[in-house]
Length: 71
Image (cartoon, rainbow, N blue to C red; front, side, top):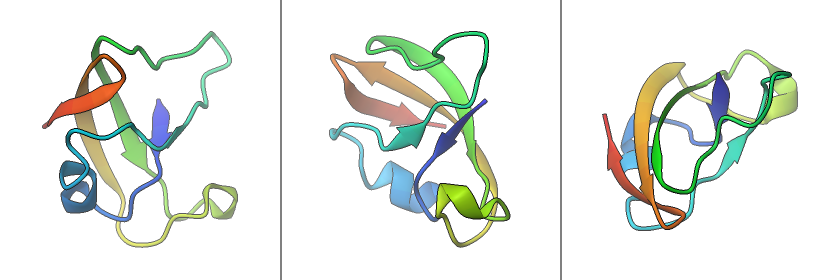
C-alpha cells in the first residue's frame, strides 16, 4: 500500500485537481497509476515518511496525473 504524504484526509481532499504527493512502498511494482483508482494510507508512526498527524486510509482516483476524487 502506498503512503500518502499528507497530514490528514482533509488535506488530501484539499489537493483535488493537483498532482499526488506519495511514496511507493510495494516491492512488487508501482501502485501509482496516472489514470485509475488505488488505495493508500498515511503512516505517521514511521519516521522516514516524514508525516505527522493521525493515520488514515483513502482511495484516490486519478485522471491525467491529477487527483479527481478522494474517498
